[in-house]
Length: 69
Length: 482
Image 1: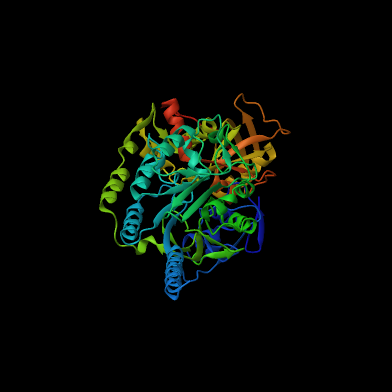
Image 2: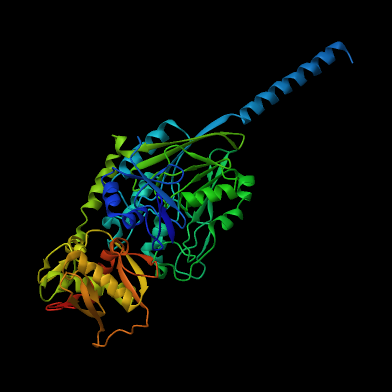
């Protein structure tokens, strides 16, 4: 399936998680995500946890953390 | 008519009018309903005692409190998933928390149809799903919806919907869903719009992911609320789409969602949602704490699952066993295991426990299958070799001989089947590997791959339980030719 991390379009296996897609995007980004220095957000601005399913055409924005609950 | 009589009838009429207004006002009284919602708990049992305490505290002060789960209650914690009676600890604890309903998520099927049916029967709450037909299978047909009876006048219908992948099945291994047919979630849900007319208030308890929840809201404004799961999305402020409120509470029971509905005359007049971080809750149900502690000390992890007639030393022997397990579980043409995923140096001769296997393979990686030709398989092997500057990938069902070009890069790679013949260069083979390799390794592949939702550790445990005795002494399938 085709997904995007920030501006980077990629094809990834069906059934992949947000974490898989970020690792495919870049190992550096994946490490920063695990350290919670970068947070994945969906197109609505919600935090998407790394274990969550990613779906065809989805865009994930990796950003510095905002204040969260 | 005399003045007295006129006065009498006027007074009676007035009293009836007053009574009628009072009755209407009584009918129109506002009722507060609290729905605690979780999703994607993934068998993370530790916080259930806090959830139970919170729910009980609210029930003590509010007459209308409900507790719901939006699917994927199982898979993600070995003390629930890998015990002989798979999934039981989770259902036991959910019963004690007094859940009112759960949607079926894709990972519910990981248990297999027999275990899932057993769990559904043990649950003191219904599992709902409107887009699956289990007729003629071993799975008990779930109800499409359930109804919460708030009082004699107000009712809330909850409709369950499960996600489907591009192959038309939920994300789990297809073998777990043999015979069950699934239909498009949104189209199926539209057949239940009458629930809104009949019950007044309609909630979607979905396991679709937030992107699909938005499409569902666009398609069905009849929903008052969609309580979702699957995408592990933390919706801190509820989303409103086409008049529908969409909520979701992350995953692994780190958060609890609390939706408050103000109901008047069978309609929602006000909706709010807040996210409660579980770490902020300081009190827990002590009885559940004890039970959770008992489940966490599960002695099944010390049980012997197989016996090694000789020690398994080094990556060749351990990796060969791990890849044989993938072949056994998934019936693919070949399987690979990277060196970095083999976390112990050896396993001693004798009994192998489940705990030993978790030390060997602790990452809970999922298995991904690709269709690849020999040229693509060589590119995978060569990427691993360049990465590690030595043989990286262990393999099952084939052997390979690699020569170096003097720069720690592949010069040639010969791929041989078990009879020693070279692989057919024109053929595509099914190749299994863990999800880390599938995304972190840069190799040629036209097929983007498909997740099996089977974990490598699950395959390993099942393999040893089946073969019982193993001997990998001297096994070497990946050879570097100097």
